[in-house]
Image 1 (cartoon, one colour):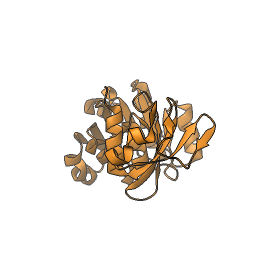
Image 2: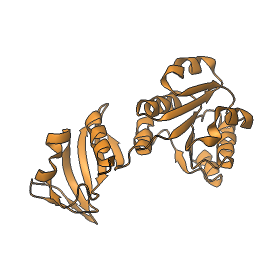
Image 3: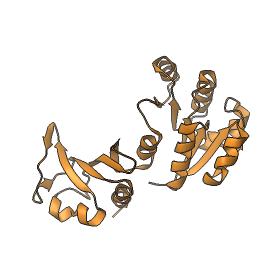
Length: 222
């Protein structure tokens, strides 16, 4: 995907993980937190790190949050700060505002603020969020372990009208097609001769690094 600028606001475990993963994947990352120790610990692993109050509009503007493509309000222990920061980010006109909610009631308040995506810690992991934010071709992830995932991939023109043998994903990327979703039909027990049709959803299994290489290849324009 093309490089984007992300703001991660609040550096708990979730926010720190999101910020580091985004930076690791080549994105520009701004982080803000009141805790100087947290900022010091992460400053070499992000683009810009600021000690500051995420509920202060001037602080956010000074850090350049208003110019970011995506703002991730990762602070959730203080619901008031989370809501104020989310409201400020929406007011900046940022294309996508994501906020972490402590519970469903908190989530409903964020919905009323028209936050674009609400993350519940018991349902969404930091890695899953980053995968969705940085993958052009991979639609969803299921994490089976620390380095193993099952993903769904849309069969665009680059994959369509070829057999599984012709695609040779196992040889080229060390990933395996487990099944195909074609409309309402799920196709398993695949052979090398199964044809991939445009619009199919491929269910693919592999290690994290292998799936990153697959996504990079699929995202590359031919």
